[in-house]
Image (tube, rainbow, N blue to C red; front, top):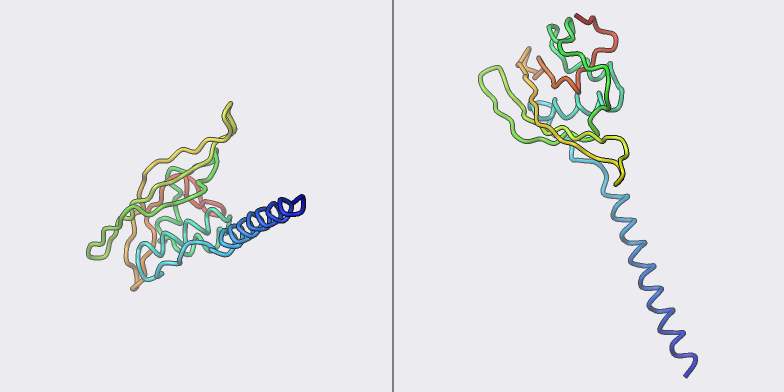
Length: 150
């Protein structure tokens, strides 16, 4: 009789360990968000935002219009970059588009741990030479390194 509870306990612990391994495998293999088509305003905003958050200025600047590259309006020098950019909606018109996004930033720790805050903003895009380019980005995602500032 003393051997039976040990086997049951081993079986239960093995099942729990298996569930933990499966859960970790699911979390680590699900990858990032699906890449949107770069020929759409949403795809351009996705790639630009990823480049800015990753600190890849040359790639980020490749999605800007010449006007946006020449002047960094609303340059944002302090505070954390958003950790997530969530697509809310996109409106396309003849040669222009507005992409509304939610910008999620993480703040410092408080008495209950780190905090997140969220705000909505928009990207203004224009179609130039058959490609969508960003004319104006939310100030938190302005990529100004190597560009002139006002």
